[in-house]
Amino acid sequence: MKISVLGCGRWGSFIAWYLCNHGHDVYSWGPEDDYSYQVLKETGKNEYVELDQRIRLTCNLEEAVAHAEIIVISISSQGLRGFMKRITEYDVSEKNFVLCMKGIEVSTGCRLSEVLTQSGIDPMRIAVWVGPGHIQAFTQGIPNCMVIDSENPELKVRLANEFKSDLIRFYYGEDLVGTEIGAAAKNVMGIVAGMLDGCGYQALKGSLMTRGAREVARLIKAMGGNELSAYGLAHLGDYEATLFSEFSHNRKYGEMLMKGEKFGKLAEGVATSAAMKALGEKYGVDLPLTNAVYELCYGESDTPYRERGEQVLAKMFARDTKSEFYS
Image 1 (cartoon, rainbow, N blue to C red):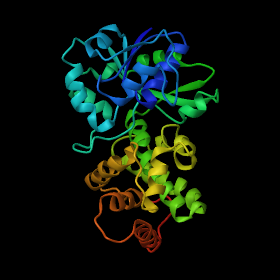
Image 2 (image 1 turned 45 degrees about the vertical axis):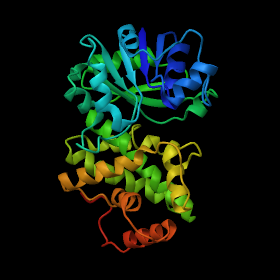
Image 3 (image 1 turned 135 degrees about the vertical axis):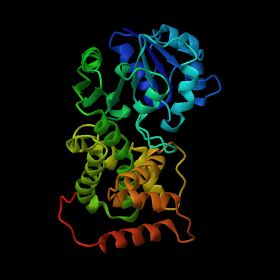
């Protein structure tokens, strides 16, 4: 299968590495002036993977698009709409798209597959690839399970069967709304987990897992999805890699925030908290954990972050008692 992976950051480079190692004809694309691309071009590797010589590394977007039967996109979620304007300058009418990224567009509240549809891509040619796993574990040969979802049953089955290996076991997703919202929302919960680490409240992570999944389930249901998706691989299944792992960018961001330190890498959960807050207000859904992250990430205060975090936690504990599974 001819595949072009657009985006050569940590996940993009891993996907190119993975798909090439499992028999596919792979192009890896990145912007010429991008640091990640330059590192790969100069050294053939980055801190995560060493690219197989069979992978064609290019900064020519037209070349990458023309090569592909399947276009995999792995970039920052908030840049997707602008990026699609560039891609649709070329003939992509016969291309299938796989989004290997997690987020919600802040300016519109759109799921990422909706951004592609609004960019002129047939929804029957769109799939998402999400779920647990860290590159550092995969490259050590430690397997995990992931999910591929699409409105097109034939496409998701074909992709899952083509991409599966003894390193990644794929499942077919059954709820695109829930799969995408759950995958994005787990990054918000990762920030909360990091905040707990920064405050020394690790014992609360069990409660975070249950209350976080329940919060996301309410939002998925209100948006027309299946609330059980919050308890699947896209969300709850990704908690180990997000709430506990030393490799989690979102968890690390939350921890360093509480310590008053800067985290220099992308933490998608920050923007996602703003998008989810807006969706919660739109659909009338109670999202206390999401709102706490938003308040800490976007609120203005001279109070040190750790003190603010403890104040937010105290406020959450002071909320009215509710049934555990309230809607």
